[in-house]
Length: 419
Image (tube, rainbow, N blue to C red; front, top):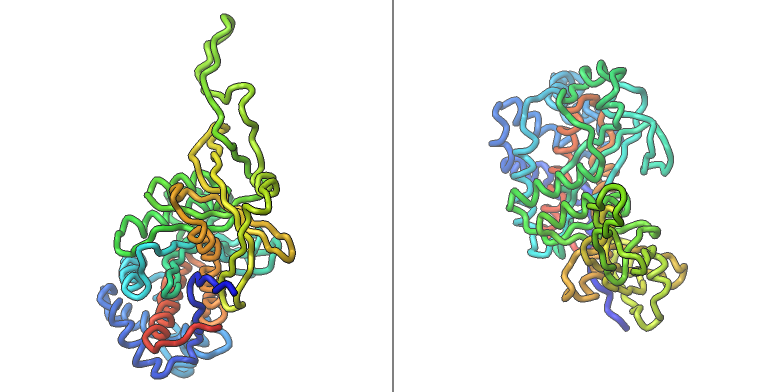
């Protein structure tokens, strides 16, 4: 029987599983406390982190403070200011966090993972809120849209960074000017797509040079953006990105040239694919045309659901860039042998990469989904009631640190992965 291929171990990250949580948290907070300039900020961070780890139904600020300090607590008034308006540096905390992640989880072939996670909200006063597609409910709803960067290795997984996506009207429409001012949106902030935000986070981690990583994985919402893929390639990283079935590629590379001038009109200057060359094909069509002996069956461990059996095939194709042949990449097909469901990915790894490596990478997206699920279920990631730009990022920064606190504790206590 084929031994299941491990992607990254699933972990039991419930705060209730940690003995001596307060003592553990005090030591953990000491890593980051020097990055807060004022005593009040250090105390606020410690209290907020502790609150996120409490076993209470809802982790907005007031329930957390009441559970920690009682009904007369002054922090009911001061902690909201610490989150919404506090002038402390998220980036310094996150950069320190990446160093800690490398110490606990880092591997030379570590994987950066990109995904979106949305947050249902009522009303129109929260920064970036809009009726838009919400992954949390699988349909359009009033929500805020976040973009997250995670990390996964053979040791475990955690979150690294976060960005709030602002719909175009939030950035450019004059009717939103008062909302932008009220929420503290930076005046010079340009409109950025979710893939652009993902690329910025990947670049920040790569340039910090404190966390080892070789790969970037993402779903088709990011993988269809060729600018993002080329950006990742330009960083010297290898991507394994899911793409839609109708993504077009060439096989083999077609010849191109500037068409000859026929003596009339302007002389051609733009390179074109020559007539009679191979036509573009959709990736799903190429996968369907592969003979049965090109597909091999593999068993991989994905999350806590147990081994998953799938059939895999890979072939070299030519990606499209602005209608012309682009880089040579791997097309990786993954098919469920029971349902026939097909997933297609493009990967810029070298020709010498093994199929086994591509199989493993195809199963490395689940950790970031699990991180966001755990964050919402156990750490109050979606329970915030702050409305400001600064407040949203402050809250998510501390949720990221709270998640990694649980990861560190599990590793230190040698918690066994779930079967």
